[in-house]
Length: 262
Image (cartoon, rainbow, N blue to C red; front, side, top):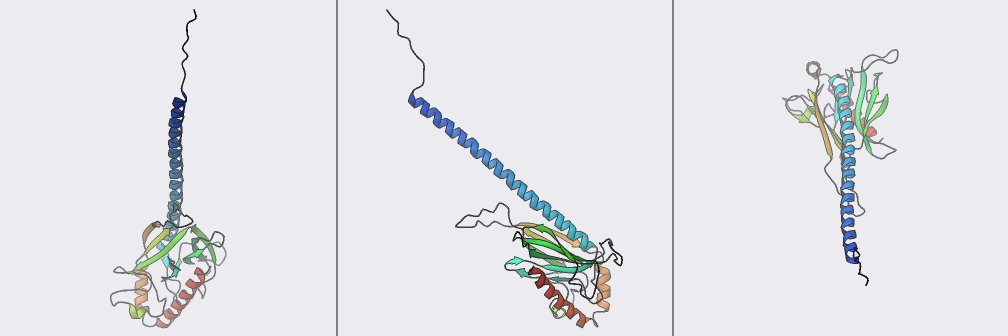
């Protein structure tokens, strides 16, 4: 007489359930891995933006701390302007932060900071113009270099110690009439507040809608050591320099527009 032998195994239902559980576990692991990679990429992008902002603000600070008047006729000039809806201010001044590189050069350099579009990438960038050979036109000449890309705004604000102004110097030819009797908006400002705005690198763009997120903003305040000396010089010659200051404002405004146009 033969004895029936029992065989252990899995039924079809058990195999289906086990496969479903395995698929669920693998899907969860994949989503966790994808989220981790996305988070890593986001952190790296923000670190790149922060590093670019740190370098740009350090350069601006170093130049402003050695700032002086452009010349006897042309002073420190800052203009409030826009490129479409973007803040795109520009500032023109002279700085002693320059090492002579050719015969005939001194330690004085004309300098400009402004926002302009990069023709290759189409993005707005912070540009610096430097001219180590001061001449009769301090708002032109020299060479320019791209400092950092991906900006969505550049703002300069100026103070004489009491109020903050969007413009500095006679950029329109009528700032003397607007100035308060207790304020000074010519010569060198006591401090400059610099604000850089960058588009969020994690901004999600879809075919139907663009998810707009607040820009990444970096700001610093730079105090100008030579401002006190400049205010004395400017106040002593304020009565007789009205005409030349008006010319300076006109040239500054024209230069700002040409810079913005690329």
